[in-house]
Image (cartoon, rainbow, N blue to C red):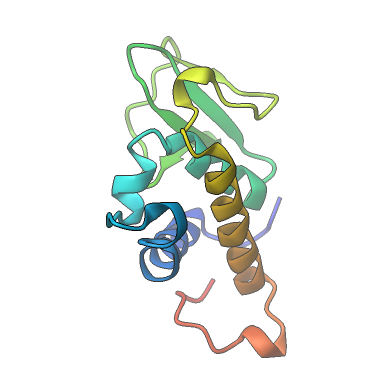
Length: 142
């Protein structure tokens, strides 16, 4: 696990990157989505996937049909695109141990969204492990 990295700061950075670099591009043309609107409309699994790639010790939790949401668990706390998620109920969430998602959460543009996630993950990893070339960023310091 990445040490001394605040997950809430990472979430803010993911949202900033999405809002400034990735919204209204590619499959999102002709409509504007910010991070919250995109990752809460059939995209919540993808957000948890991004967090899982950045924090490999955490786990993705799929909500059942009553909840219809996906969250990320790290150190006994739960997170989604809006930050800490306080509505976890063990009776309505189950761990996605294989990181495969579920049919009810698959986005119609799955390949495009995974590519988007990989771009965001790369940008965040550059911020966490910056080289001299990447230090001129507007991201919140991690």
